[in-house]
Length: 128
Image 1 (tube, one colour):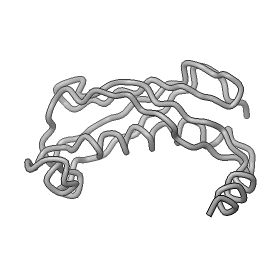
Image 2 (cartoon, one colour; image 1 turned 90 degrees about the vertical axis):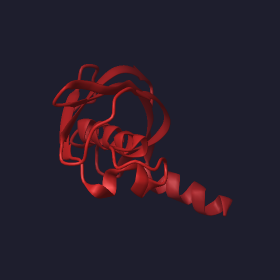
Image 3 (tube, one colour; image 1 turned 120 degrees about the horizontal axis):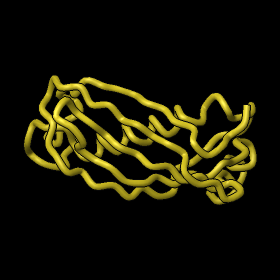
Image 4 (tube, one colour; image 1 turned 120 degrees about the vertical axis):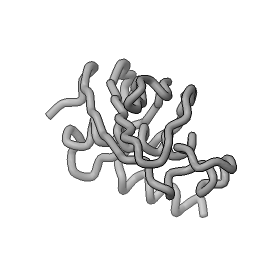
């Protein structure tokens, strides 16, 4: 398969106590944490391209720019939608949106780079 503009993926979770700001330490309330939303967004993006990657290829996240605009309670569903909007050689840019049952709770962009796993890990190991 081929990675091309317009690829989309959706992934839904039910907010659990482990997903809260109080648990992450990013706040003190038992509501869906911004870091948990970002994790959901990155996971959805990875799912978007996973089947298109050749064996030995992967992607790494390098930038995320999102706004978390509404709180979500524990027990509610959160759906994330990711769409590939730009390709520049190995750089991929996605839009990401998260929704609960009342509507949009977060949105933004996420940038990833395609990598060769062996080369990436070899370079990382040389640097250490």
